[in-house]
Length: 539
Image (cartoon, rainbow, N blue to C red; front, top):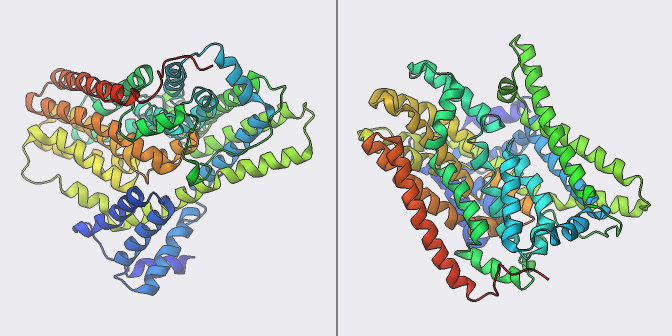
């Protein structure tokens, strides 16, 4: 394996100073949008990137692609992080199938029918669940989808709309919560930057909390998803999906069944607890595992234990698979008391695992492409665009844009944090130390926007899985909402940079947000005139 890596990297060329580094992600994204064939598009991006790295030598190109695939699972040892994520998806697929055959989903739908009487109500419940489950975006996307899907299906909410509600309460809430996998990672990065530049006497946690109201994209993305759910705002492609859903078509069946939607026989004696209890155990077990893995890391370094410290040093993917296995065992234990035949058990396990395979293929291809993009140094090229003779007044807005483009092109917000936060810190120290936190916050906001919008982002992919929605349908329907909030955030960062006032920047974004809601409301009402009144009770 070592020889393979040595051969594959021996003839690579650096593209950190060339716009060619954008070619591979651009081809993957453009083809995905045009053709809606995600695997083929990702494959085209992989081949393009490998050809560039290998200087168009066919044999070296094949080796680079094969090495990239191997590195997903083996990178100087087992790549446990990726393996745990894939195993967690399989486990979650099986849990979903077991919940289905238990009749829990059907029972929850019947229970909710008497309490949640409108489409808006089902959407609001989804949003509240997304905000409550803030420990990790991966877990958020999958758990909220499992709980909410029976209810939103009952009220004829399209799977594309459900995917948007899930995605818009995953990363945006995680990035502003200090006790989350995202918060811990960001606090560690910000703390190092603050120490390097002597920019603050406060603790990294206080600095992180101070940045929360400056994270304009996350704040207003959350505000928009609440408004969208409460007012049933449907714009662009989303309106088409919602009209189809109201007539009974929740997803485009011409594209086949979306990930996570196996058809299984359900027990007529199911109870609401058959749905809620396994998910609740999954949540609690995952949180406990995150604290335990963080405690283990702290104990190994002889540091004092704290909840925040545990979340900062937790092993998220290991915690997910531990929580997943505990949740699976719990679901199995509950079903053992039922009179369920071995044939149904086997079908649930097989179909639950199989339902996740399309998503796993997409995720693996996305990881291969991300590795190749890293070798092309796309992130460094985009970061280099920021440097030069730029007025400090425009830096927060420019950092937001560049971070957004980088996260969109690379499909990773965390990778963008790692590259852009130190750059923003250096630029703030050189230009105006008082603008350190706003500039760091603009990087966080831009990275979440880019990751939120990118078809090759693992968070976007997992949101599609959680909602059981065709992936490109989710990407296309979510994009108008994300772009609208990005424009709101850009205006705020421009005002913030010009006036050096965080309050004025926030107010500017607030005014723009209100105008955006009015515009979306107007567009949605025109679209709704083609659909029966969406607020009426579903009978």
